Amino acid sequence: MAEESPFTRKFRKELMAGLSSLVLLAVLARAGREMYGYEIAKAVKAEGEGGLIFKQGAIYPVLRSLNQLGLLNSRVEASAFGPPRRYYSITDDGRQALNDWQGAWKDMREFVDDALKAGATYEYQPTA
Image 1 (tube, rainbow, N blue to C red):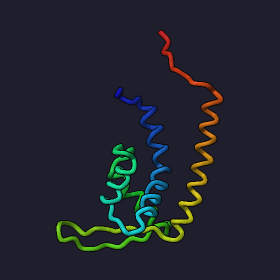
Image 2 (spheres, rainbow, N blue to C red):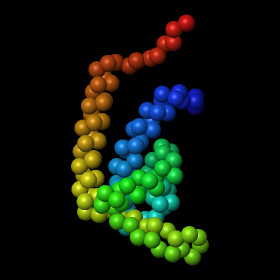
Image 3 (tube, rainbow, N blue to C red):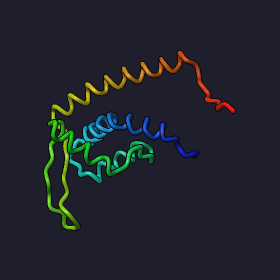
Image 4 (cartoon, one colour):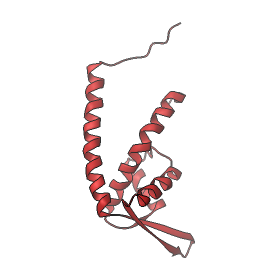
């Protein structure tokens, strides 16, 4: 795999800034139970068929943000094998947001797909 340009890395980062919240809500809704951060990261990786598209460490600020918004509940529990773990579960508001965001994602995906189809495939040809 060729190394990505700085433009592509920036583009991916901007896409993931919004999509990570959608993905994390979906994982917790599908789980139907409380999960702690590392467990959530493993579930995201498993659902993405082994290709985690955002770094595990990036999950924690998003979880905190979703918790502050009231879309997730959290609680801390002592762990026998290390530091305390923070467990997250989706709230009713989180389920509503997930539903709304899935609709917004579908609309956006269709819009982008249509825009890309309309322009035909573009192949960059560097000038000499």
